[in-house]
Image (cartoon, rainbow, N blue to C red; front, top):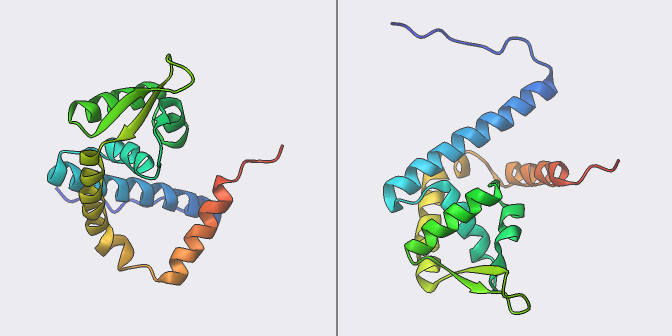
Length: 153
């Protein structure tokens, strides 16, 4: 059976740009997810939590992770449970509030993140890094900064 060549039809430039962002995010995320699963048995959602933890010098509250990631509070909790069962993160009580739990990467978690991050870079090299020059990257950074700003209403 031959596949039809589907088209979105006539779109305004802004609509085309929006759907392009959706396509790029979905396609690149799926590629990275497959590579991380294959090489490290590490889903992209786990990698994302590790990414945020790797950038911290101190343990962080799970709620702070939820606010930064694209995951719900319950998803963050499940991911942290899974990472902890593999020895990649540790939980500790917050210094001022024993009811509050803070999370940090273990030394093994930092090593696993470094290996997974190298896999992520490799997975994106041919479809992102090799296609975009420094000017393209600067333009994307400008776009992301504008899109991340809080609306003034």
